[in-house]
Structure formats: structure tokens, C-alpha cells
Amino acid sequence: MSGVTRFAIRRALGLIPTLLIIVVLSFLVIRLAPGSPFSAERKVPPEVLKDLQAHYGFDKPLPVQLVSYVGKLLHGDLGLSTKYPQRTVNEIIADGFPATLTLGAAALLWALILGIGAGIVGAVRQNTRWDHGVMGLAMVGISVPTFVMGPLLVLVLALRFYLLPPSGWGGITHVILPALTLGTAYAAYIARLTRGGLLEVIRSDFVRTAHAKGLPERLVVWRHMLQGGLLPVVTFLGPAIANIMVGSVVVEKIFATPGIGPYFVDAAFNRDYFLVMGIVVLYSVFLLVMNLLVDIAYGFLDPRVRYE
Image (cartoon, rainbow, N blue to C red; front, side, top):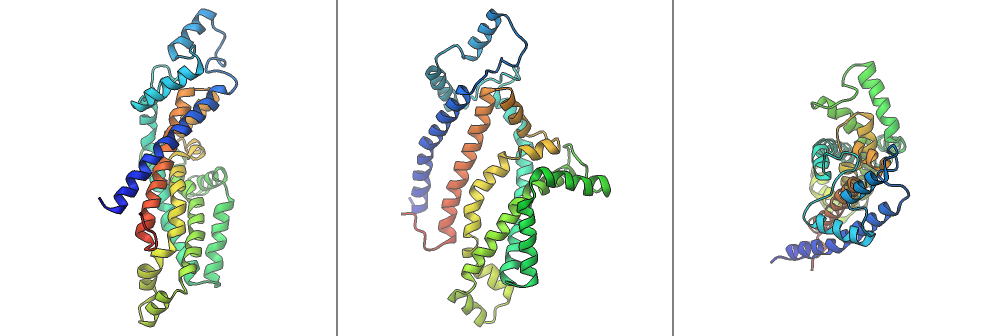
């Protein structure tokens, strides 16, 4: 068994107690919050309320509910939704996740292409107008929140020039505006990290040797600088991918995207315990897996890293 395989297995096993702690703490915080899933409904007879609580298991002591939830979770059962009584949490997430995943993948692709490209320009043209221009735009991208960026893009690209649909879902044209809105801020961070990482290696001996051999600038960048210069970006991508894939709540609301973001907002307001927990668990799994992949990728990008 190779070193990287042993490292991956050891790290994967280490994620289990971490995920269990997240589940237990999230469950207790959500359940101990004021209110209940039935407090917003019109007043119901006590016997009906008692039946509802028994149906969802809320009449049992909290430790018993927690053990029951963890037991079902181990079998892939995320429970019943109280807001949508005819649907399970598994069904709701399965319904909304493809749209969220599509939007997240498009936003990530946009962020990587724009961010790495801008970062390379900034590093290779350090302290020039190009450098100041792309880094200035990166600051704008970081400073403008998505709830401002989204309506601005709709106003210009959809309502002024009629290039793209302002909202809805159904084709690739419906993905572009929300992906630009969601990915631009991440592109700005990636641009700054790429520039900083490249500047750390740009004066290294192996880069000077490559220049001395007469290699074209683009080959020096692609063959010699990016491998070490992208380490800060790889570190950032772990939590960033999890946020992009699951955290597009505002963007999905703005563009009426049928993802899991609107479900999460409604679940939080309606105290839909199991739906909130299901999305929290999904986000946590994404975050932990992405961090694991980042740790593994480090060994391939940095020869100084050993898995033993």
C-alpha cells in the first residue's frame, strides 16, 4: 500500500469523529433554539399537536431523539420534513441538489479561469499598470457582495441589452448570470492568492535557470512557476468549493434557481429541524471531503510534503 493511500485512509477515518461532533452539536443547537415546527401554524387542538409530536418523535427525551437521528443518519435516512409533510429530507435534497451542483460547478470554473489568469498577469507584470489594474478589479470583486452584484448584472445584461434571461432555470443561458454573480468574488480571492504564490517562486533559482535557458515566458510560468505558486490557491479551494456548492443561498434566491438554498432559508424560518440538519450534514461532508482532497493534492504539488 502506497504512502498516499495510507494517508488518505487514515485521514478519512479521522473525519468520522469530526463529522459526529458536528452532527451532535448542530442537533443540540437547532433543537434547543426557541420555538417549534408547529408554533407558526394556526392553533391546533392539544390532541392533534400531541399526535404531530409523536409522529416526528418530538415527544421523546432529547438524548433519545439524538440517538435515533444518528442511527437513521448512519443508514442514509435524513428524516421527515415538517414543512413538506409528504416529502422526506432525502427527496427534497435530491430534488434541489442537481441545480445547486450545476450552478456551483459553473461558478467554480469561472472563478478558476478568471482568478488564475488575473493572478498570472499580476505576478508576471508586477508593479505595472497591468498588475495594478487586475488587482484593483480583484478588490472591487471582493468588495461587492453578491446581493449587489446579482441585481447589477441583471440590470445591465438582462434588462438593458437583453443578452441573458434575468431569472429562471432550464438551459445554459440561465446558468451564466448566477454563475458570474457567485464566482466573481471567489475569482478575486484566487487572483490575489495566485499572484502572491507566484511572486514567492518567481525569483527562485529554478525559475532563473529556466529563463537563462531561453525558455519563453509562458513555458516558464506553466512548467515551473504554477506548481509551487498555486499552493495557496489549493488551500483556499477546499472550503471555497464547499461554500460554492452548498452556500449559494442568496444567489439562488435572486435568480429563482430551484436549488437547495431556498429550501434552507424556508427551513430555518419554519424551524424544519430535519431539513436544516440534512443540509448542515451535506455541507459538513462537502467541507471535510474537500479539505481531505486538498491535503492529498499538496503532496503532488509540493515535493517537500511527505505522507508518512
